[in-house]
Image (cartoon, rainbow, N blue to C red):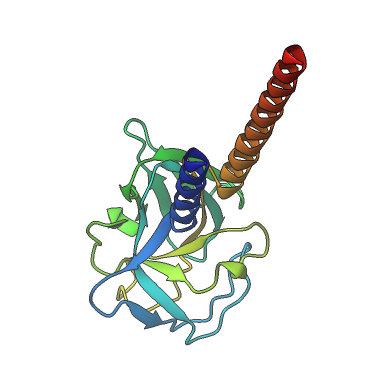
Length: 218
């Protein structure tokens, strides 16, 4: 009985941990929330957003291992901007010339995700690192703004056309999804069902052995 309660408690703890794990977007310390100063309406994969809609500047962080996917949702820029992700070897890149819906994926560990946007004349904005003057990475309010696909986050890049805190963050836009390497809560539920079935079989076997033993003694 004690073992059964121990297993249930351990499974409950794992379920609680899984519910709070994954990606998060961390605001920068200074003036992290800004208002869009231009109409956001040139992205094929997103709904239009009005001037004044909030954007949070910051970085994307993971608290566990898993697989992250970045999907190109479009751009509205007069420059040739791009998105790149480092994999511990050759990187993967999304370009404006690619079709909307193109994606790159990588296995990651805990910590700041290693990706960056590039704008005109080699201007960079590194996730969790330095941003060149006039550039920034923004969390576009409401991942439900995508016309297609389910994304945990939608990130927009403001290229080097002025201030990092002015614009519409539509110079290169990506949708982000994450699949944890830790089993999902449904997996733990199946594990509990399996443990229950094994326990039931063990009880039936013990009962059958007890009945057989009594029959042989009779």
